[in-house]
Picture 1 (cartoon, rainbow, N blue to C red):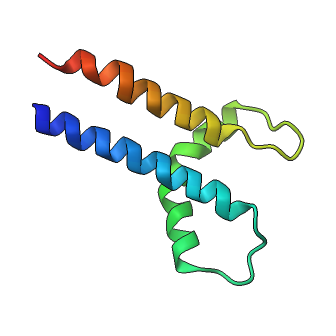
Picture 2 (cartoon, rainbow, N blue to C red):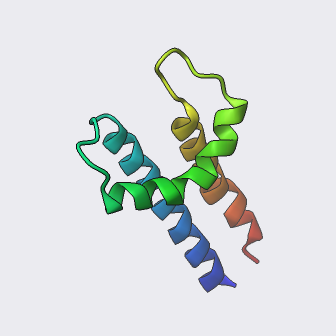
Length: 85
């Protein structure tokens, strides 16, 4: 059970890192389509797309990555420890 929780925690932190990388990459105009950028987008879009439908944009600001990171941290730090025996 503990190993499963560690794997889930690792996946959550990996998702946070990918979301942050996606945010940083989005600041720079694409010179050409990169496989790395496409992979990051493909991996984070299932997390961010539902949040984008719920959260209105504030002008040019997309707050869905921030909300996603907060939700993932809440899950990782507060809900997963409750599953420990």
